[in-house]
Amino acid sequence: MISLAQVYSVASADTLRCGSYLIQEGDDASSVLAKCGEPTQKSTITEPVYAASVNGGEYATGEVAETQVWRYDRGSTQFPVIVKISGDVVRSIRFVR
Image (tube, rainbow, N blue to C red; front, side, top):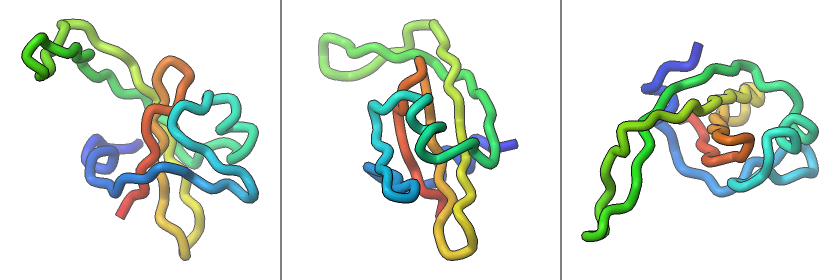
């Protein structure tokens, strides 16, 4: 099981390389599976939904969204990676320190 601390205590990334393929935010989940295979771990977290306020800030809408969290362990010489997927779209890619 992936803890929330693992999800949020990570380094930012733009892309993930799986063999000769690149995965980036905005890709669909099925292409991640096709290019990277099944993740080492899968879990689902529930997160609050935020909206932009008129003064430029954000506020919680009172709604929640389920986000899939996929962890890929890539061997002893590479950092593991956490891929967050919401609505079948990659929302973030982060390497675990």
